[in-house]
Amino acid sequence: MTVRAFFEAAKVEGVQSPYDTIHLKILYPAQIPDQLEKSTKIKPANPENAPFPVVILFNGLNCDAQQYQWLAVKLAERGLVVVLFNWITESLPGVISLTPGIDLEKMKPTIYRTAPTASALPALLAKLEQLQNQGVLAGMLDLQRIILSGHSAGGIVSIQNADPRFFPGVAASFSYGATNRGLLRIGYEPGTILALPDSLPMLLMGGTRDEFMVNSTELYGLSPGDATTPVIRTFQEAITGGRNDTYLVILEGANHFSIVDQPDSTTLGPSLDLEATQSQENLRLLMGEIISLFIDTHVRHQPEASQLLEQLLNTVNPLIKSFERK
Image (tube, rainbow, N blue to C red; front, side):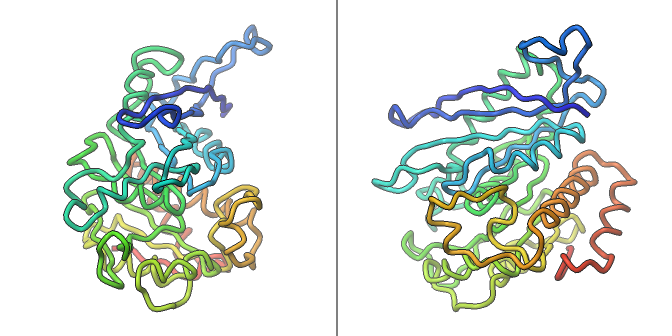
């Protein structure tokens, strides 16, 4: 399936200019009639799989959205619309960075779970409503089947806000390299794992070489363990489960940036990581397939996808260290 993209911008209410603008790239399944092949106009969407479920992908801190385009293209090829975005704003007091938009004030013990922690999400959803009413995707979006997804801090945003109480259109979430630990400096006791919303399908993924996860344990008062302990504890302690639609997949040899295409060596993050011991290309291919089948199973409700996902996760594979579901 042909994939094309267009760009948009959205304003975030309550944020001071010039840091109040999000820049979006929307990828979609396209239809390219012969007469438009050489046209510079935005190509029409392919109505074959419409209305399209929508994936919103929250980047890791200081990770450019373009680094996740490989995944966005793969998902759009399967009949999904994918939103990538960049937002440069004050992520911490006095710190300007590329952020997925995580509201630390809303994460404090007295507030958490009473309000959303995703400061960019309302603006993104408003833009999707606008796109549903005009433009190349008008009438083709399924805004009752929105999947929140992300990497690292963006993964935290996705799993914390997959809550129909705040965002009724959200249908599922997935993350890589993300855990739901309570920061000491905003008032949590050492070692706290925070509860997650638990009414929607969720896929948590992590890697055995995620040194970034180990290096951040002091921020949460956790005892140093291996790279997978925080992700495993999130699966075990933050989610009740019971519907067999919550997954934990640990990838052998994957590091914190295995989901990223060409990590940016000029930012601090990659320098804190270990080298992956498996092919990053092969790891991304596997991640893309797991994510796609998870969505096809639990959002698009395709029976054959459920069987394929079960087979993929239960077959002996040197890239999969462990798999759990509850």
